[in-house]
Image (cartoon, rainbow, N blue to C red; front, side):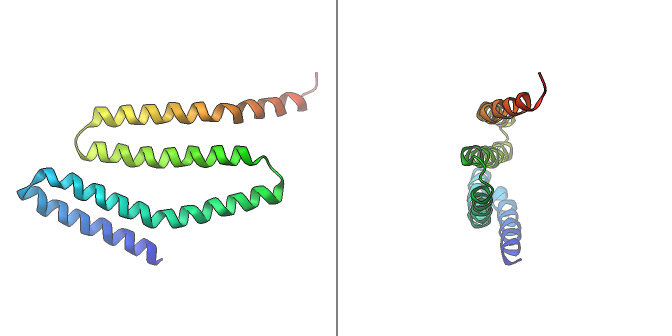
Length: 130
């Protein structure tokens, strides 16, 4: 609960600072937004690492292929980082670059998912009768 309050507080304080700074030096508003985003991401990393550790322990206990879990974690990380970058691009008024970052990250995620899809199709084909 404390982490949520910290994140909300940082968000609200940064919004107030951005509104004040935009009146006098609008070019500095993006820096405040970027710093606030990094601080919020820092607070979220602790929770994300707990989730990753939980998923790893579940994978070890179930005997599942850990390489697939690593791929899923990387894909999730790419999605989070891409969303962060897209938001920063949109905040600075660069919607075209934001769209390209989003498209590129989606292409990377899809390419990373191919081994999982391939393995899943192999399992399905083994199960189906000839």
